[in-house]
Image (cartoon, rainbow, N blue to C red):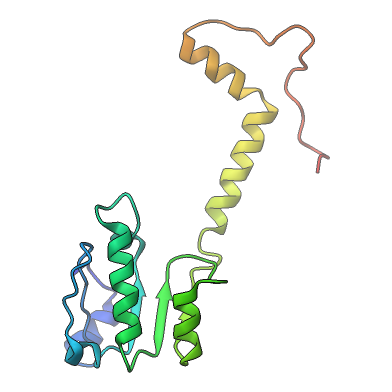
Length: 153
């Protein structure tokens, strides 16, 4: 199991929390007795999303197990949107709290958008193409130079 925070480690040591990491190969390792003990689950991107081998089968096995866990109360998913995800709709309709990672990627997304705007406004795409060709290629005649982004929407 991956390392946990000190608070989680303390709960495990006190016998108040049991953590089981399911394999990414889609093999069901929990029987009905074990599934009956599950009250919370975390759908991990690292284990269940491509390019992991067997990722889609692994995801199907995870959600199949989640639906069979009669005492499941809480499911945390790594993605932000859960609209129109039938398996999550089914879990929520039976009272399972589904929480998301909405907002977790916002700073990185904002920085990526800003970097893209700067690259476009400064003609980086043109210059990167020239660099790949190992040629000096000034901007075509009539092309404007860097475009200030101040005041633009």
